[in-house]
Image (cartoon, rainbow, N blue to C red; front, side, top):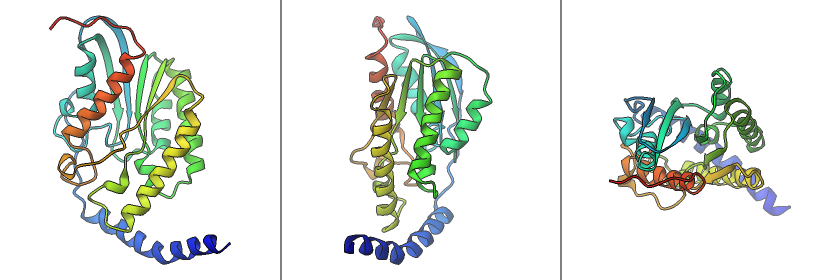
Length: 244
């Protein structure tokens, strides 16, 4: 009982500080644009795979100048060494899981073999309950199966927000703990869904590898992220390494 009471008191004390810090960070953090460049195309030779990347500002490449430096560019480059990749990017800064659900429901029915998702940061920074987020994530998984006939869904976990340089304490600690909670529940949600795999980019974030806003990935992090995704894809889709 006393532990629960202490938690409630702690939340009551820190809540005004966290709210004020959140407003301050939103005001002073540079608003970086989405990466320029193509958002669909075909690359490589070999076995054909159809790839869709969806999500928020990280999926849209905020933090780098061009899509070639972002997740999509690095991923397509890596996969094009083994496959003919027909790819498309559907992402926008600020998107929540709910936003992506609405956007995707309005897309024409088509087939993608692999779909990569990047969602959760904007849900964590909002007031959404983790239970609601999990329902939305399951709705998203169901939509990807039914509307896009997807064989492999690669879900990027919420990044380690407790390490974001742009966030002061105690806001950083609060969002980091909330991100961890979302990830734990997400892991439980997908563990028995064989077509779903998690991409865990948790680990030590070097400040110099982040974008100038201290909130988004820089080129090094995007490349590392893409390499992890590419390995998951290659482990499930047979290929013949093309000669260099």
